[in-house]
Image (cartoon, rainbow, N blue to C red; front, side, top):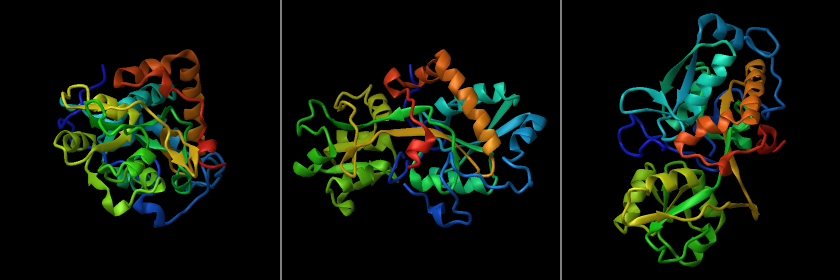
Length: 305
């Protein structure tokens, strides 16, 4: 079973706008860099590819930037670090010779600025890979892919199955702070100023149950998990939002500083081994992931390269 969705986590992550979860406020920060998979920038240490992996092996611990979102990366009610990304990090970094992981909780919008200011070593928050983010960090290949889903009243009385349905039926629409779903709705023709923005998927469920909105949009995984105990709401069938008129599938991955290509490449090698052996799915499955969320997408594809 996936961990229960609720308010026991220390922080609930704000998802991103323009894709899973938008371009962060840190876009204008110093150092706009090239796309993941293509960027090759000399590290501050002067070592080609960076020396972070060697330093992590020497100190025996890697600091993970997380944003408190179930099921991607959070502190549970017992104070333990968990989630699909931290659990995957524990396995991969162990294989890379780094025995311990240390969480550094922050708001989602602070993850990329925090990474690039060296507050932590890697972003382990299931972050969507998109071209805007690829100008600021380099990504490992995605460890999962994700479609969207709606939270609606039982029986889906308005028949909402896509963002175009939301527009056509003039449904009252909500999504989360900074969620990718904001842009998907706007692209379908929904007026951004009419969108109700709530903190997270739990608040979205509450808004639907209370009748304040007709629909809340989020990832398929979080939608299906949050409605499990609801007597008033359900999740719609997952679907791909349209981006520039074409169905779009998002992929979430670990992010690294642009100088640390050696660490990113070593991480990718171990990730591929886990995918091929089936162990990747065994790590993700307890957090509600299904085989439909496994992917062969690459960071290069999602970065637009």
